[in-house]
Each structure stands twice: as structure tokens, then as C-alpha cells.
Image (cartoon, rainbow, N blue to C red; front, side, top):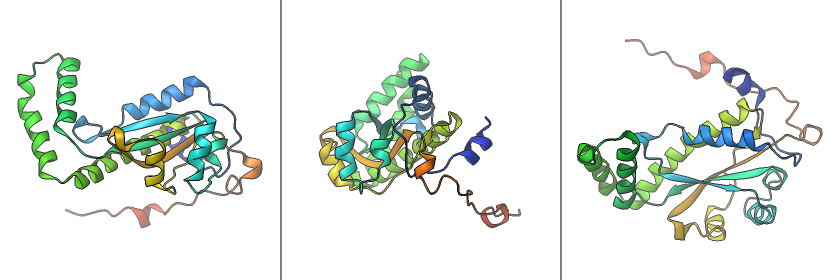
Length: 211
């Protein structure tokens, strides 16, 4: 299945059937998400993988009781760092040096640039930037799921503060941003499953800018 075909196939499933997604498919979706684009490669977020049904029932209660949270095979929670700290940057620079086989000294300029960006912003500004980075990975996960013909339902309709408290995210330096249940559509009980995809026409969406 090509990417275009996969995106034509996908929709935001409103009901799922509880069928378990094979681990091989989950692994591919997670790996694609790990490889997603990220500004400066920092990836200032974490992705919680929640399979436990009892915990998902608790999450559902702070997410407007959306049924996909418990009808899915598992739930991904995209959580952004609540600030970009020198420790985060130090870890990233050390990891970069190790992966690329270069000296820490050769990365001094890059490290200083990252520190300068992080330190000139407030913690809230850093969080908002981190959240936007998390959304890039979020989009990648949705597309990756579609290529595996796994349904994924993007969700913002939840009480972030309540979810953060439930999962002790504050203590981890994280704040929840989005939810993504992964599973299989229950076409018989999902009114949206048979509907045509509605997207704006090319000439309404794209604006060609002349030189």
C-alpha cells in the first residue's frame, strides 16, 4: 500500500473492536515515530505506551469517556517536556557524540546554540515549542499506522491536568499533549466508517506563490 492509498484508507475511527494489533505492526509504528523529524534532532517529548486495560479505563474517565481508549489495542500518549533544561541538552550532545563517533569538543558550537535557544525562553515557551515537536511525531505515527492498516484516532479531547496527575507526569518533567489509540475499526457500529473522506480541493488548499 502506498502512502497516498494508506491516507485515503484511514479515518478517525469512532469505535474500535478490541482486536489486538500484532506486535510486529506496533513495533513498526513506534519505530517510524522514533525516526520522525524533529527540530535540531532534540525530540523534546516522550511517548507513553499504555496497554493495561484497567489504567486505560481511568484515562477514559478524564478523556470524555471516548470509547476508543478502551476498545483499542493500546494507547499512545504524547507528552512534551515541561521545559528544556541544560541536562536535556547535555544528554543529547553526549548521545550525538556517541552515535556519530565524534568528540564532544567538535559539538561545542551546536551545544552552545541549543543552550542559548533554551535559556532565552521561559519554561512555558519551551514547553509550547516541545509540544509542537511532539505533534510532528504524532502525525508521523498516524501515517505509519495507516501504512500498516491499523486504525489510529487522534485525540485532544481530554483533561490534560487530570491525566498528568493520574500518570504522575509532573514528577517526570512531562505534560500530556495528545492521545492516539491504536486498534481496528468496528465498522458495524461506527457511523463514520462508511462515509467518504472530506478534504479541501487542491485549488482551495494550496496557494502558488509567484516569484
